[in-house]
Length: 117
Image (cartoon, rainbow, N blue to C red):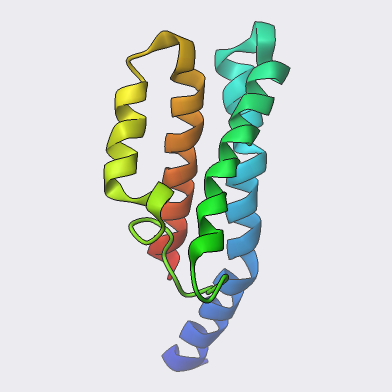
């Protein structure tokens, strides 16, 4: 198999597994975070981490609404670098730390997706 065929096959394989990894990081990884770090209240923490995905409502402001080749980090208002800095500052407030963790993990997940583009 020549290198071109290998690159094409690898690219197709990555395109197939990319959504699974992306949504696994959005839905399964927060469960792991909640269970490992907040075992006593892991279900409540998991639901809070899932609720931070409401940050994706800013995608409704984009035209077109969905573009698989668009990196959301730095494009959408709640995915902006200024917003990410604010989310990092929120880590210093214990009462909302879990929300900050969820928002930052969401940004990390979306950024990893951007690296694949």
